[in-house]
Image (cartoon, rainbow, N blue to C red):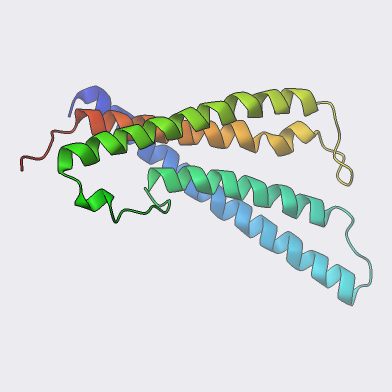
Length: 165
C-alpha cells in the first residue's frame, strides 16, 4: 500500500473516531433533553417549548452522522446471496460499481444539501429561533463524510490485488 493510501486510511480512521465521539455526545444530549421534557411536563407541569424541536434536529444529525460511520464500517445492509455466487473478479467489479453509484448519490446529497443550507440560513426555527441552516447542515456534513469514507474504500478497492482463483 502506498504512503498516500496509508495516510488516507489514517485520516479515515481518525474521522471515524471523531464521528463516534460526536454521536455519543449527540445521543446523550438528546436523551437528557427528552428526559427533562418528560420531567418538566408531567411532574412540574411546565413543558419546555424548545425540547421537541431540539430532539428532532439532534435525531436527524445522529442519523446522517451515523450513516457516515456506517459507510466507514461497511455496516449498511445488503443482499449478498447472488453476490457470493460470482467469481472474485466479478465481485470486485460489482463492488466498485456499487461504491461508485453510492458516491454519485452522496455528491447529489452534498450539492443539494449545501443549497438548502444557503436558502434557509436566514430562516429561524419556530421554537428555538436558531437559523434553520444549522439544522439542515447535517445534509452536506454527513454527505461529505460519507463521500470521504467511500473515496477511501474505492481507492483501497482499486489498489487491492485481486485474489488468485
